[in-house]
Length: 103
Image (tube, rainbow, N blue to C red):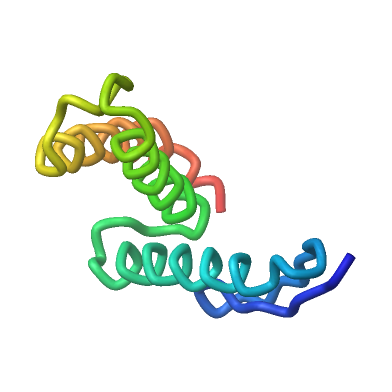
């Protein structure tokens, strides 16, 4: 097992991977970091946990639309997927808003 030190949205993480998979893991980290930073910089999503959830949903939707044309999102355009993600974002905002007052 190899350990890599990476930074995602300004936060340091130590990740483990198998030998020979370092490049793939670094690419994944870079992709996730760019998604999360874009969400943060848009100003529409606040809080690291929300940003992580929205980035995960976005990546999952991309994966599902590419993985299987017969999958749940395979027959939809990227615009439709983005609209669904925005709707999910609104639901998450409403559900998580009460937690912001707890901090």
